[in-house]
Structure formats: C-alpha cells, structure tokens
Length: 89
Image (cartoon, rainbow, N blue to C red; front, side, top):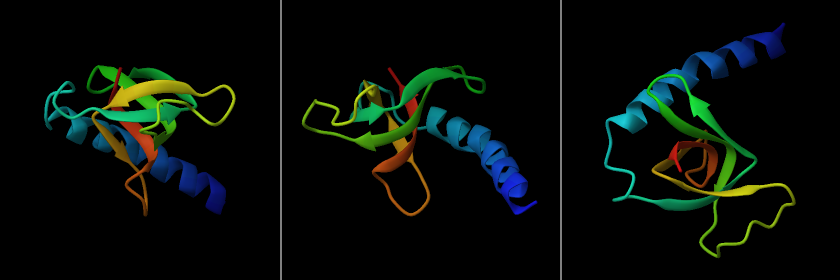
C-alpha cells in the first residue's frame, strides 16, 4: 500500500515540476549538460523530460545506455544534481 502511494505522489508531482520549469529562463540561456536514462516527450507543458538525470560537465556518460541531454533544470528530492531533467533537448 505504501509503495502505491509513493508512486501516486511522484506521478502527481511531475506535472507541477514540469510546468514550473516552463516559466523559467530560456533553454539556451541555462543549459545543464546531463546524462539521462531516457528523454521522453512531456505532457504539460510540451517539451522533453529526462528520466533519472545527473549533471555531467565532462560530456561522457559513465553508464552504458544513457543519453546526453541539455536540460534547463534537474529537479529531485535532496539533491540539485540528480533527478528529473526538465526542458531537455
């Protein structure tokens, strides 16, 4: 029961995090180089969202299968460098 509640909380908070990123700066102004497990289309607002992203200024993703992305923000719980990538290209 607790696992289901945690999943529901994360899914409910994701649109809020994505919409707050859209009101921020332009993607070209604040680009954070990141490695993400996947980059998928977001629902609201339109744009791409990175899944399980972490900041990576070296340009090489250390884990096999990760993709490089340029995100306006990486939001997560407890850390500014790991989490959901918002506004990714």
